[in-house]
Image (cartoon, rainbow, N blue to C red; front, side, top):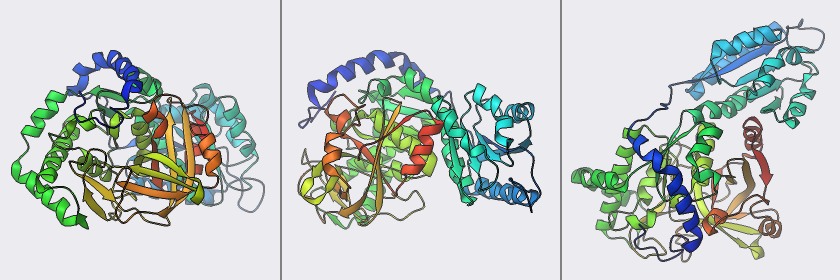
Amino acid sequence: MCENCNRREFLGAAAMSGVLLAASQVRAQDAAAAAPANAMPEKVRIVAMFAGTPVPCDRSWGVCESEIEAMTKRLAEVEKKLGNVEFVVGRAANAEQAAALMKQAGEGAPVLAINTCIGGLLGVSTPMLDANCPMAVYSAPASGHDWMYPYRWKKDGKPVTMFTSSDYAELEHAARVLRVIPLMRHSRILVFTPFQGTTAACAPEQIKAKFGSDVAVIAQARFDEMMAAVDPAKAKKDADEWIRGAKKVVEPKEDDVLKAARASIALDRLMAEEKAQALAVGTCMGWLKRGFPCLGFTRLRDRGIPAACEGDMDSVLTMMLFQHMLGIPGFQGNATFDMAKNALWTAHCLGPLKMDGPDGPSAPYLLRSHSEIGDGVVPEIQYEIGRKITRTKLVNLDSLLISTGTIKEVPEQSIRACRTQIVTEVADPAKMVRNWGGGVLEGGMMTLLHRVVFYGDHKQTAQHLADVMNINFIEEG
């Protein structure tokens, strides 16, 4: 199961309990792997509800008709920009009208409620609250006094968040957060066992219950057949592209890159056939003789498909949440601290080149051997110094660990640890070391170690996401 495992011995005996648990939980999933049951729709629906009755433009507390017109126009622009969202726009002055609008949108559609007057939100809130419907409230300044209530509902366990601003760009912000819920419901995750991570994240039925996502186990033999069927000419072309694009090829031989290209093409075919949105491979270290998957994982992430190393289900779910919300990939890696520099390193042997998303620029890279095996081929990616980052991980399906920082160092060519490295300045590394895991994360070494890094400071956005998904929000820094 785990050829060539020298470090960690796939995290050793600590991982075995997770392996056995996962195996017992997924046997029933094997037969489902060939038949996607939860296809991703072209667009997901969000109710955009103007709550209450508009006021005259020159008096009172509220929103007038011209402002509603401007917001409606902005919603149309957001639909076009996001591409996969359809707003069901309407007005509701009471609970009955709100319920009718929710029914029009369809079961499970989250609600963006826009307050228009004093008592407007309160007058329509009952059907959303009774149904535990995920809801984002937009409240412009002086639009009424209803802004005082959403976070009180949140304290009562309701999936509610709020945007209070004069900037209509917050309507897009709210839509990005809300769309995660229906997108996760229609998502499909492929797994090569063993599963790794927290117990809840390794349980397909719990993932289904929490997010609605399907999990399908892929047999290694099926993938081996796909590898054998790869067109040699296509593999050679892909390998040549990797070699031409590299700043330098250090250790790998051409045959190493060719094997990795063959694995990458087979992964592309697998994801297309399964109509899947994410992948976790628990046998990474055993793929070396057939072709290391690291280049293929990089390509998948660059195209907007999360792909997690070492079967890390917590990390793949984290990548999915942020991919659906922001359209950007994550860099999954191991952490280590340097108190002398107020720094936290993140290092792994692959990552996305396009950290700003599929339409963004590619980072420069070297082609290297895997650092702990000294064989195969992986990309050593040189991320941008000076970029703000968010470091996070969903754990136990119910808690989001988060911290922020700034990239201060990236090696020209790494010497130790995994090949791709960033050194980020953090506010209080001593506090982070003591609080690693936020008091909620336990498990084996890999489960404790991994975090996922995204370009940008997304702490506030992540807080909104946690609110509407009823997830605990825990700052590690």
